[in-house]
Image 1 (cartoon, one colour):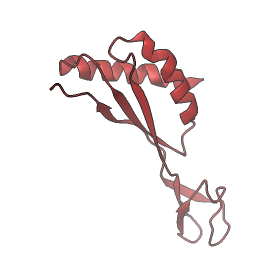
Image 2: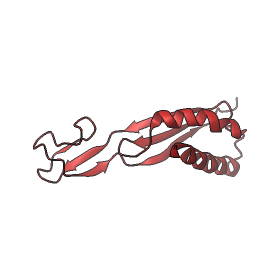
Image 3: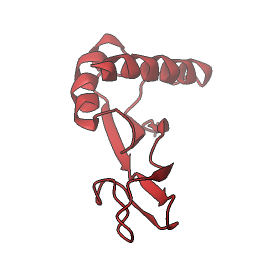
Image 4: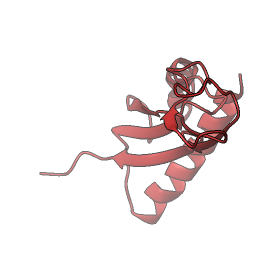
Length: 117
């Protein structure tokens, strides 16, 4: 389950941001995960419940995963289409030969912090 390794990396990066900005606690972390990655969002969420207890600044926080559609461009006809919805095949010419143009990223989109009153 490489998702745990990824989550520990996310936690380390967020910890650095918190230290640099004197932020004692995070309320939520928002990740963007592309459909064309080998990352399973449900595994991230399950793993986050485990690792968040290892860090005081994350304890009780939430992980939000935004899934980004995998988009391909057919090398045969140039059609741009959602890869997963079409099981990898171009809906215009049925070719499987494509370039993935979107949906390969894994990134920290946002760190949410409750504002003081």
